[in-house]
Each structure stands twice: as C-alpha cells, then as structure tokens.
Length: 321
Image (cartoon, rainbow, N blue to C red; front, top):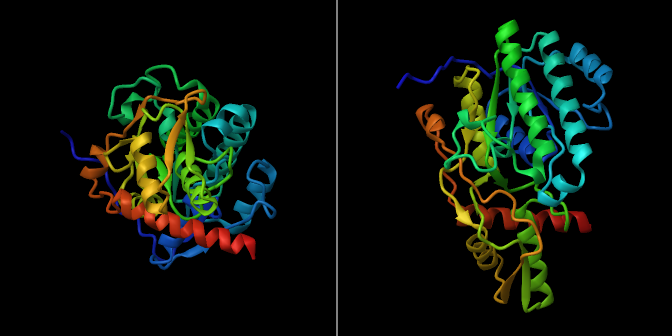
C-alpha cells in the first residue's frame, strides 16, 4: 500500500479563521487552537452571514486569513434534516461555496472542509471507506444535507485540481460533547438522550421513550478528540482524498441509551417509539487512513458521555441564569 500523502504545514503565528466557532465542532477546534499560538479569527452571524456572498468576500479581503477551518453549517438530527430539507440544502451550499471561493480569492494557504458521514450511500459496505462516496443512493431523511456536503467536498477537490489550492476535506462520525444542541425535536441523538434521561431523573418519570427501534448501530466520537484530529491533519495532510475521523467502533442505539441512562443516573424503564424513523441501519467509518496518518481517538465512550453530561448541566445552568 502506498504511504499516505503528507506535507508539513506550520500553524504557529498563522492567522486562522474558524468558521462556525460557536457550534459544537467550531468551539472544540477553537479550544484546541489555544495550544497552537495562532492569531485566531472568528466572526458572529450578526457580523457576517456566511450565506451572503458579498459580505463574505468583503470580510475575507479585509482579514485575509492564512488558514481556514470551515466548520460552519446548518446541522441537526434526523427530524430536523427531514423537515427543513430546503434550508439544509440552500444554507449549506451557500456557506460552502462562499467561504471556499473567498478563501481561494484572498490567498488562503490551507483550508479544511468538514463533511459528514451521511455523504455515504445508505447501504454502502461497512465500515464506510472514503472511496464509497457517490457509489449508491443516499439515506432519504438527510439527502439534502448530504448533497450540500458532497458539493463542498467536490468544490475543495476542484479548487485543488484547477488552482493547486491546499484544500482538504475530513469526514467526522457522529459527534457529542460541549456545545451540543439540546433542542427537544431537532437535536442529535446523544444530546437528545442526555436531555431526556436527565429530565426524567429530575421529574421521577418511570419511562423514557427513545425514537426508533433501537437496532441501528452508530459510532460516536467526543468532539474534543475530533478537534485534535483536525489540528493533526491540518499540519500533516495534503491530498484530494477524504479522511474519515472516528473511533472505528460502533454500538446499537439501545445499548447507547443504556450507557447514557447509567451516566445520568436514571433508573427507570426505556421503551422505543417504532413510529419514528431509524435512518441508516449502520454507520461505522473505516478509520484506517487516519490511523496510517498517525492519529487515533483516546476518549472512551463512557468517559466522553460523563464529560458531555457535565457540559450539559453547566450549559443549562448558565442558560437559566
């Protein structure tokens, strides 16, 4: 097997823009960059709407970041993806195209685009290899989001091919941790279950309902591990090929729900609402390419969920104040 393409990119003293710094991924990348001695740039949506091409171009021309982590996106769980289909397609396409083009036009030295494991076909062979993208139909419930993310990946690839831009793409698995969205309808499964089990414990509820059958298998990565992987790849990787970022291990939703319940301290019953969609039967990433590049996840699931629960308690306390 050929060695993975690599190149040294020094982050120290660079002007680095984290797009989407208030989201779960962007905030984790921002925390990790604090150890890198960079000149950090962030911008709020109120200051620059990344869907506004003219505003993005003007901001990049004024700030001229040397490195960009494109973590900004409209994200959500299975219900949000399936309900807000037009928004997920338009917003994510606009963000990707505006930021990638502005980065290229204003001399950005390196850009990392964040994809999503939903870019892979619904029934692709498991574990999911990077070269399985575009080999079959997508999961219908999140197809608009997946198409927008595929377009961003292909755009980064095209700018590398045509202009020689050092733009790379990474593919995170299901994430959890500080800064997650705990919306009762639109959150991802980890945040939804943390909130549901916590509220059931506080209220003394005897049963918690988990959406779906509980049989789909999912891989979960603590978001600060993702951020560490991204810094590693930003420094060492330069190639058009995607890089999966995950743990290489998965668990059923039913088993995962029991882990969350135990962490929260909920001791009641758990039932399953089979009228709710399951989504893709299994999503496990092949992390062989990432391992060859010298990085592996270090946060065990139980330890990560404990950290995520503490973050949830802290964030809900702050919101109540």
